[in-house]
Image (cartoon, rainbow, N blue to C red; front, side, top):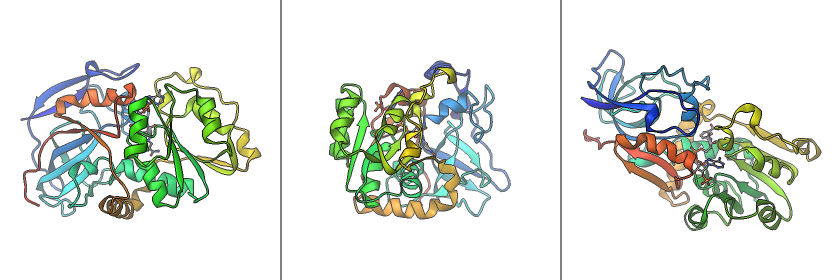
Length: 341
Ligand code: NAP
């Protein structure tokens, strides 16, 4: 038997345990063309709230009573699929459960992780968090050594990788914004940020005036809302704004969201603001993972992970993202590998 979290109701606000049921069900049997995998780590992401509310079109609707969707690191236990050999450690869409039946029709398809790195990095640094930071900075940010760079949500899963990756791509200094003294301390001591702004304890206008007297060239935005508008009022010519996410607005009804007043500055400054979706870069994943893994090996990239134990803690892990409780990549360790690789 195995444990599995099923969606019980659709949250209005921050998701919690009451929105899920933990059930025991049989481990799935192998089927033609598929593989049975054992879950080792599960990740959480802000977008999962939107899956739970059926607000995304890239994740098929999750019916109440079905397994909660999500990706994780897993080991192939049985296989009838040559791309998923027994023993392989993969990153795949396994759902919130201890065992899953998967195949290569998922998009993004399951991918094999570097064998020499900690398994947990398959949730963050050499997986979708790291790839998101890399493609956002490289494809949209077009980082230059002279850029004055600002990152919001800097101590979160994606943000904790952005400063080090930006520097690997040529940046000189990077400023991070996060909430609270502990996060801000870790931004500068563990995540490669040169200056930090604590938006929960500092006046944001004064802090931005002081930190960016010459304006902002590159903004990697994870939070959206009023802060994005503020930054739009401070951009330089040819600035680039990378819209990675807008977590400050995911819990707010559309009509109550921030009304932007500085968007015209994009035209005045010949600047660009562009969103992107990491799933659309699937063809670049192998090369991105190689690059990220090499940066981890040579300590250019130093992942910060926030790990709790046991599949029982999944709802709390998801809530932590909205409560601001996570430092680095929030994930849950679910099990240990069983098969020698
Ligand atoms: P994350 O940053 O770890 O998210 C949790 C953090 O968000 C919290 O610790 C908190 O940090 C901050 N936060 C929560 N509520 C907030 C609010 N109301 N205002 C400001 N900050 C708030 O999550 P992540 O997985 O790394 O994702 C970061 C962003 O990237 C999200 O918006 C996500 O949707 C997006 N994303 C986009 C892609 C893509 O393909 N474009 C891929 C992955 C993720 P503080 O304590 O510092 O406030």
